[in-house]
Image 1 (cartoon, helix red, strand yellow):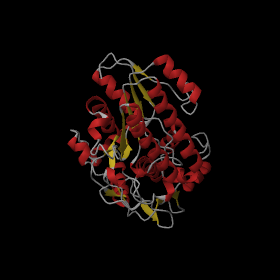
Image 2 (image 1 turned 90 degrees about the vertical axis):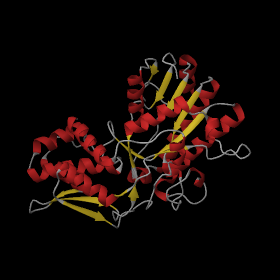
Image 3 (image 1 turned 120 degrees about the vertical axis):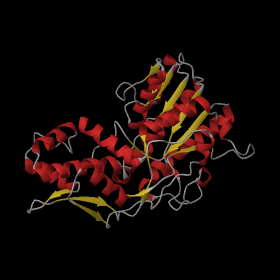
Image 4 (image 1 turned 180 degrees about the horizontal axis):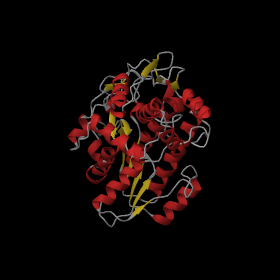
Length: 361
């Protein structure tokens, strides 16, 4: 990419999109196009086509998506498959029509089978049944991969798909109804610590920053305690605070700092072409690239690490009646390493950074 190229980052306010914009700006790129969802509804094909016709971007980072944790994925199944497929279909097709030089499509490692080999190589895609709780989202992302591959094969486009592991970092979603496990645990541990200390100023400030189901710091303490209890942060009659965590705590997960994901994306956009991802010219498939650390930690260990980092000394309660999801989701990052990129920020450091960012509001 040249500094004069016009670069469109779809989803620039999200976890990865905002980090990509920050990375591009740090490198000296100034011709970056962004649109909020209110300015451009990517589910609207007419609006997307008009935008591409007017702007004619040279490069596209497709980081826009409807995302969420296990609860949101399982609850809003129709929304997750419909909205994600509409977004990616519109942007990928408009990129082809308007001769975009290169597009990077961001998916997720939930595309792999529930019982995939560990670590998960790219070629295990579509070899077995998906995890039920996020199946609609996974199917949408698989469709995106196949759309990029198919357009490359038929039309000669240069569209690359990358599959990040679990991400966390600045601008993460701390909504307890829809957030992923790591930011949710950080917020719960923070609120639990504040409850233990009776620090209602901090609790009210937190709720004003991120209301839960319409409950803000302006609500009564009773209303705040009730909504916290609903989401697993409970204060008992003896003043003890506990945090409920879905599942047994045994599932293993891999986490990558979002700014490193952005670094990998910009690296691949600049140095990797679709042809570099092909291993068999007679059977072109599984050309996507896993992006991760290749390291894993149990949910229990993660919760205990966050508990220590935040300074919450209450009880962690694992509710084994709730679903665990896939037991392991470790990425095989050998393809990524062979292409010349690997991570640097370890989880311990990342959690420190994440909590400090959260406290700044």
